[in-house]
Image (cartoon, helix red, strand yellow):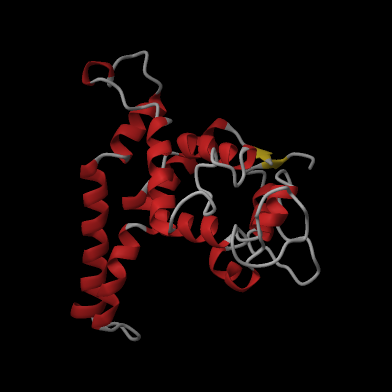
Amino acid sequence: MFVMTKFWEKFFYVFTWICQGSSYLSPRAYAVLHRMHHAYSDTPQDPHSPHHTENLFTMMWKTKNIYNEYFSFRLKPEERFSKDVPDWNKFDLLADSMVARVGWGLFYVLIYVLSISIFELPGTHWAMYFLLPIHFMMGPVHGAIVNWSGHKYGYANFDNNDKSKNSLLLDFLMLGELFQNNHHKLPKRVNFAVKWYEFDPTYPIVKLLHATKIIKLRPA
């Protein structure tokens, strides 16, 4: 959909880790899964189709196992700091480490304790602590919603020879990603919305990034 300079590529790679935190997924490895998902949509080869797994949890476990197969930085200890290993492989070693994940988890707990129990910020309540497991695993939770709902519930604008759907009622939570039927028909289209009543909230942000020359959109 777009290209960017090496500087911005590095910036967003690290920013991905900051935003995903304890549920970090390597952009390179997940890109492989995303391409597989489009190539084999709703077939047994699809890494996350709800139609070839027993339930939501088995679907995400299958996704995890396939993701691990393509996570190329899993190197032998003696290879990890070799000059021949790409820098991003070394970064993934840090970002995917248990130390990093636990560190992010402790940081989230600290924020909750400060907000709820110490400063007692308006709108907070002790019951919000039950949200911590979701916060710890926000990446898989997001993926589960998009890939399960987006291929089971909603309507279809196009016949894509798969079971992709537009889950309009849930899409406001996923910032446009639940227009799965539209996206599978037009994978290079930046705006996932197609009909007049559909709105992709991420599209204006992408246009702003293009206008500020942070990215350069490719012709659809």
